[in-house]
Image (cartoon, rainbow, N blue to C red; front, side, top):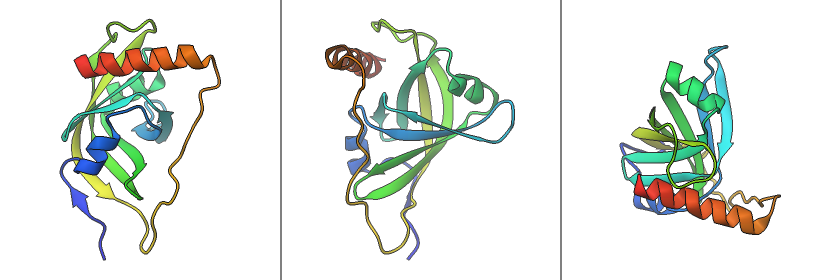
Length: 151
């Protein structure tokens, strides 16, 4: 049975991307030309065809997408693993109403592919814990997510 391929986010994935969560982002490294994978959490599905994420304005991710805008997000949700492929662009150099210098990146989705291997499902999704001041982390996360929603 072939894995399902969609041109946009399906509803369960859109819903999962309405809150901060762990995903990995693959870009093409601007120096080596090879793959580069980063873990990010400030991510938001703006609609079924567009994803926003925020990263430090000095992030290598920004340099990578400036040289090659092809990206893939790996999302574990809906009891499966998904590859969300698209083209990224710098939407805002500085995300407003956030105390950190964060850039806002926009991804135009081209393809959403269920890449889970045959005959299995995810039973536990990745979880993480902030290792710095919990109140400060919660406040910052809320500010970043609200700023992305306004963008």
